[in-house]
Image 1 (cartoon, rainbow, N blue to C red):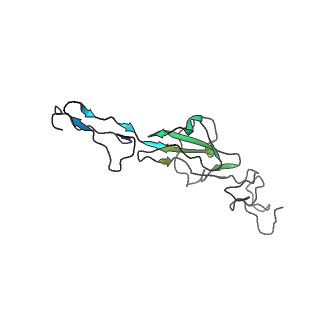
Image 2: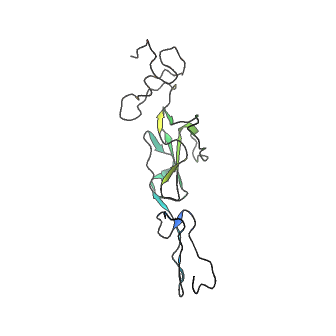
Image 3: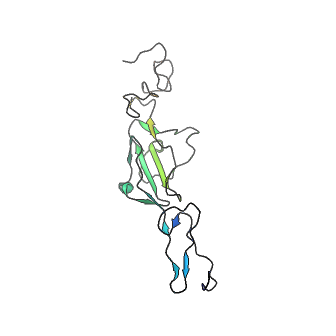
Length: 173
């Protein structure tokens, strides 16, 4: 800029802006003032507070506070639930190590992105865990449409199949 003593333009790095809001056009260039120099300072983009998925609780007490760029949030699925797609090719991302001991199959992680929203690092939902012997609800229904029974295993031919659905010829009571 003019009168900047040949200094290059000053910009905020990805995930930062002058006011904490995401900038859709990329990096923000700070203005140069001949008296004050560079005007403004770069602040991390604000995502706000993360929302807990259904059937999950926050792992850290500070989860309810406002999160900024690169902050992560962890939730643990309630007993009888696991992260949707865990152990399958649907569960593509490997979560960062949890700060609290909890089985990876039950930890849901989100990170505040440079765009100002929470990106998913694992599955997004907690779903009933088939084969654990607990018949649990998924949403507002008394029994999840995907888990009609749960006899504690994933064996075929015992009345409750490997996907926790009642097998033909059997009735659950």
